[in-house]
Image (tube, rainbow, N blue to C red; front, side, top):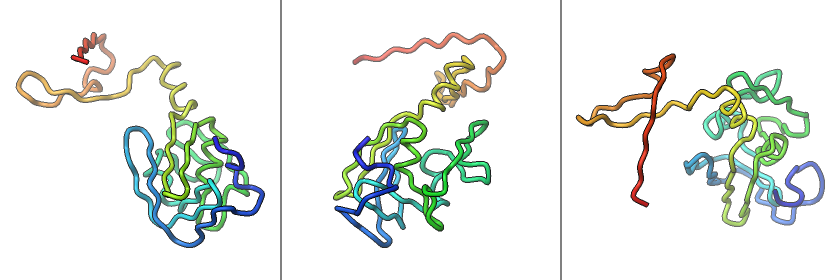
Length: 153
């Protein structure tokens, strides 16, 4: 995380106030978000954009995703804006930012990954069968499954 990423103090060296577009890299996707603002390396997004970025949703008890809720302190909220950089820091997510290019890259969310490792339930995925029809792992939930993978690289 970059210095000053909590967005709670200091004057903005790079201030891109107003409504501008930013690109966020997360979970193998590039998400373009409109109506953002930047204070130095701190990214503020619209509250409504949070679910499409990382699956969390703002609720009275905090930012929630499935059975995980993270309390949100007031300084991370500014009207209809949410401090995504401070949230990433709060949940232990790595962030690399290039504010001048309006580009942020977010790493894995440890609290989400931890739930998978503790439950020992594989995430759902789909692969084509021999006839090209998609087969989802979730179709076999409750049964023992052996998944064999191979790659040429």
